[in-house]
Amino acid sequence: MFKAGDIFTAKLPRGYYGAFRIIKAGTMEYTEEELRAYKLLDDESYLIAVTQYFDKEKPKLSDPHLLKVASYGPSSEPHIYVYGGYKYSGKVIKKHFEHIGNIPPTEEEMKLKMRVPTGDDPSGFSGRGAIEESFVDEIFYCVAPNEESDAYVMEMEATRKSVLCRLKDGEGDKFFRIESYGNGLVMISGKAGTAGKGKAKKYDSQEELKKDIEKLVAEKLAEGYELCTDYFIDDYGKVRFNDSKHQENSHENPTVSIHEAYRYQDEKSDKFWRIEYADNTLVVNYGKTGAIGKYQVKEFDDDEACVKEAKKLIVSKVKKGYKPYPEFDPDNHFYFDDKDYELGLHRLTSHPKFREHFSHDLYYDCTDEFAPFGSDEGSDTLDMISEYVRKNKSFNFTVSPKEQVEIDWGSVYCPPNDISREAVEALLKADNGESDQCNSDMVTYSTAFAQIKITGRIDAELKQMALNAMKRMDIAFEILGDSVTREFLLETQTKMIKDLEGFAAT
Image (tube, rainbow, N blue to C red; front, side):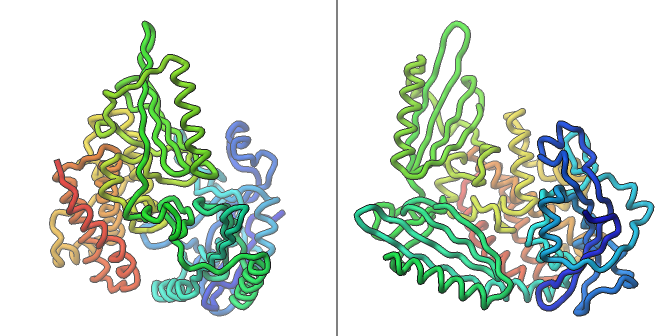
């Protein structure tokens, strides 16, 4: 068990050292019901602050940077987290961090609540179940100057490697896939045509990683597998071999889905139920006739199992009195992602017009920082709009960016009206200008794509706002001289701008 004030250091990427300190140690300040929900009722928890220390030498307790809490910028929130579960985090702290001493927290810090924010009480800090190995990298990105973090990203990209082995015999067709990045790798195995199941592993050095990859591949070759390069990963993360019947299903040619709708009416109720399925995934949408209804997504081991379950569900509904509902118009309906769906955004929970026009993987990418819904801003925007639209079908998408930034976030919204270089330079020089402008632009174009994803249409004014916002971000990064970020931005947004320009507004 660690104590308040304990300070730990770790060697960061590129030969630097960073540190964090414990502000509080105890149990999280939750009700018993909330604690049980987080499975942390009997566990030790910590309020942890990342310090501003960043140097080539190990920190000394006398260094003033250890008392300062780091943040991503002048306008960012302090980098403080709630970590729950001694039995989880304690082992990882000891493995990756070195205890160097204790500096008691300040009086103000001791007043901080050890809790994560909730809808009823927004006070608190980001919560995690354990300190994971990636926390070392997170500290680095938090305190490292741009030139250091940019150089590290380029180093990591150079280490990216993918190897796939295939075994095709009388018993079936399966694969073993390795994806490595930095000092970590993911091993994925499964049947051809599925995404398979994965297991992650981390190494102390690139040398150890390379040796293990060679060993793993050699073991598979000894089992009869063969190295394979003639494959691709489709929209759903499934491994497709180019000799299969699914060859046409690349991300620019999404799989055709089967859609059926049914309706039940009697003197007490009037409700609909519809199902749509493609490959090994199905979506059911049900509720009162005329309403949006609830969405549920199910994924199966293979296509055959999916079709079997879909037909089973249809038969079940027909037996209960549901009848075909040919009047149901898929284009005149709203689409939402299932909140409990672990794989993130999905084509089958997106409007048919969105799927057809925005078919590339990036529109369903939850990791690309500049994709419509990949950043924190984009993800939050889609979630908030989905919640609002469910309550009000006539929701005004065009005014939403301003309201979200100013009312929901309490920040300054920068309308993307004037995107001349002079106007962007003036905006960047203002207090919090870079942060306000970037947040405004990301929320604006995320809102535009969200409107199409949910409704299949876009307002002309919002479309122009989104195009301006994406172009203004490029101008801003050019002015700031951030060539690495701009390179990643252009790769994504060039495609987004072209596709959005080609989608007709209403």
